[in-house]
Image (cartoon, rainbow, N blue to C red; front, side, top):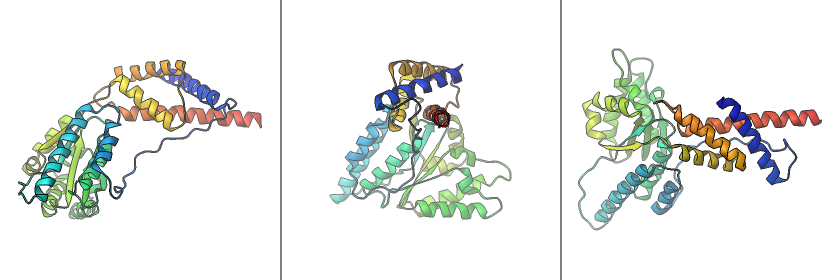
Length: 298
């Protein structure tokens, strides 16, 4: 049912886009939206500009408050340092909890840039890994892989997605990665900030698996699932970036599809990722239709 409605929605989007552009039916080529890329922060960025970029994101109200609160704390510490006052050591490592597609990686990238703007980190780049990027296949390999990843992340942020997968048992090498990481975090405490992310309950078990984790990760930011209206807004933004426009009929169909996706969501619901998949499906079908139309007219 949802697939059929998606196809109808794709046709409505096509027609409205073609009508506004003054093009014949089937003339608009699909353009896939680009995914986020891990890049180093631009030189001379201002914290205000980074905060403005965060505030422009759809939803994430609680996350935005936590971001601003943390930025305020760091700014005051920066001023105290400039005034010759002493700051007590604090841990800036973070735990991001929440379901997939709720903006965790995007916010981590913004935080890395904010840390640089505040002088906490020299580069402010983001290195993103998961278990496969840290855990090796034999004894000793895991420590080498983990050290290599940390070396890449120095003076920036190391973002470990689905970090709970490191809490293995028996002969698993995940715990070796954790112990190596904890030592390197201490060795490079002035040059490295680590953010671990994943589902809420598995992350709680992960932090409880090693006493060193609890002592280093004491700041939590939770990412709530998006409501239907927020998901629809994300869809509009993705389509707009791809130069598609929703007609009134397409807007209503989109609302129906997104509502059904949200109502049928389970604990593994992909939020923004589900919407991206839907948009890319629409674009793929449009590309197929455009190609068929062009070949038929040739």
